[in-house]
Structure formats: structure tokens, C-alpha cells
Image (cartoon, rainbow, N blue to C red; front, side, top):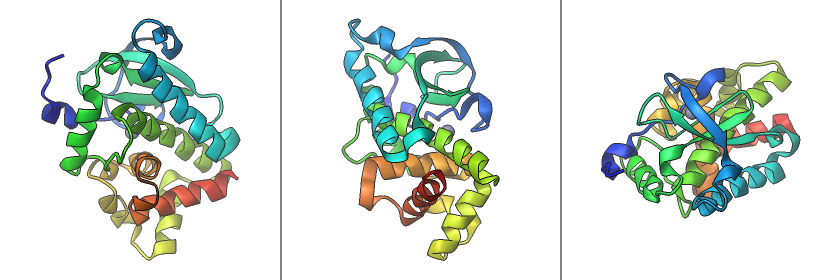
Length: 208
Ligand SMILES: [Zn+2]
């Protein structure tokens, strides 16, 4: 509370336990559905609607994701994905500042723009992107870097340059490149970066 939005804007996503990024550690968590009827209903609805939208778009690859609210080991992590669970930062459940934070993060190029989406939708679509990247890599028997490489070859961009067309955070590693592409396309549709659109198209072709 009281945190300046520009500072919160550099808040990172946790790729979590199973291979996204860095330092996100879940200290404690509870089911997202616990928030319904306790003042966190609209936040919960945004997350559930995002999950449902991905299920419609990607079918079984996006099914079976548990939705949780978590406190993390730091104050900058906005969300994380690991062990089939999407964790959203508890401090934003009843706090609209997440949208301001994501807009500030986009303004600095740290994350893609969020279009008309809310911060919660942007974070959730990033975390679900981790799931899609992991499932697609497993299904195709390739790495997440290979997925980005396939997308890159289709639009004539070098693999190592793809992330630079998406966001600063996308440069962290190829898992984050895919997660950021997922959020970019979910939030911006046909206005998303061509690199993001190519990555999401590659995910779809693998996961069909
Ligand atoms: Zn991530």
C-alpha cells in the first residue's frame, strides 16, 4: 500500500518454481476462489475469465491450471507460475494499483502495453504463457528457445533478437520471451508485436 506506481511498475513476474525466472518464492498461498465474497471478487473474476479465454483458445494445454493468491518472498513479484498453479500477488487483490503498475511498466518498455486490459489480466496472461511454453516444448520434444527460433524463422528475425521486439523483461530468458509474447497478444491482439504474434502462432500450431 502506498507504493508509487512507477516503482511498482518495475515489479517482475515470477516464472516460478518450474523454470521461468529468478527469485519468486511463494511464502504462503490460498485458492483464488476464497476471495469471492470477501471483497476480491472482481479481481478473482478477471483472473478466472483470463484462464477461461485461454482454455477456449488453446484447449487442453490451458486446462487444469490452479488459481491461487500468494505472498512472495519479495515485494516486486506480481505473479508466478509453477507446478500447474498460477499465483497472483495477494497485495493487489483489493487494490486497483496493479493496472497502474503495469501501465507504468509498459511505459518504460519493461513489459508490453496492456491495451484495454487490467493489470490482473496482463499478469495472468503472462503466467499462463509460461504454462503454454512448457506444455508446447514438452509436446514437441524441443526447448522453449526452439519455439522462439521457429517463430523467428517465419518472420525473418534472428532468434536472439526476438525478445527485443517484445519487452525488456522478455530478454530475461526464452521462457520469459514466450510469457511476455502471450501477454502481449492477449492484451493487444492484432496490435501486438509481430514477434509476439509469431510466437503465439507457433504455440498454437504445436498445441493444436
Ligand atoms: Zn515470467
